[in-house]
Length: 168
Length: 166
Image (tube, rainbow over all chains, first blue to last red; front, side, top):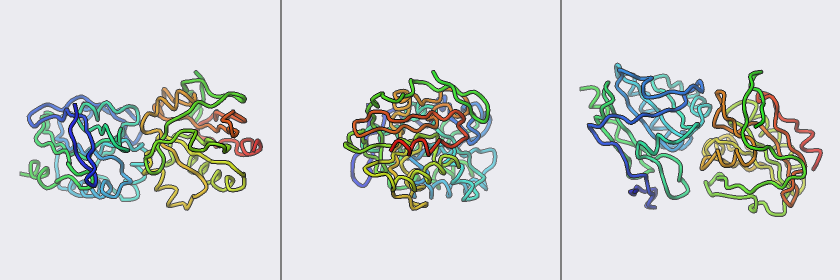
């Protein structure tokens, strides 16, 4: 099963099992900037912002990562997770050059199960295998408070709506 | 299963690495525009496959720069720089460095398939999931003229030996 988003009016199919508000975050295992395996449990007790994007060297993604890192300065007990198939070296190069310190970069370099399990895996077009743009917010018990799958890949997620849930 | 080292520590590499005289298996890799290309995209040319873990590490970057410089001297030869980096990252690097004599190809659609077919799949250590450092030179018929699986991932490949067969 799949459903469609678009890029410049071209339809793109995405795996259709996006988690819903109220559900508990599915398990994931990713690789951090030190090339260590990291799971959902690594962030136990923290609120979480999960930011999925197809590649940090795409200007729209780069802008989102900067925006979110800046917003992260005012949030307490919250981890911001940037999740993409970029290699950890690539994401570190970006974050160091931009002096970003309020977000955590995680790579799917050892497997893309998370994209499938989180309903963001692109299944058609030249971007097949990459994740769509998505933003999810979970509370300290990993319960989802907000889920946005961006319908036009050329645009950014709605950060304000998501962040309001954590600051009120 | 071959073994190389990373800063002295053993690293397992899956698949059977190509030897001189073998015919290289075809591949499907994504170019800078995310189009899938196979060996036939370079039909009739000799090919240098410069395979490495990531373009955003210093040794890999050096190898791409060096092959870019030397590639322009070899006639009828395509230099293909292959890694699990996304095409966006590969393009950023080559654009920033002004490298025009090399082609970058990404394994992002299926790193395991390419890496196993070519015997360069790192299966343990901190680099598990990436391609090892290797150079394979093919003639016009995709027959292997030279192959080097670099024994220590932190070291550069032997450029002279690779270029000598061309």
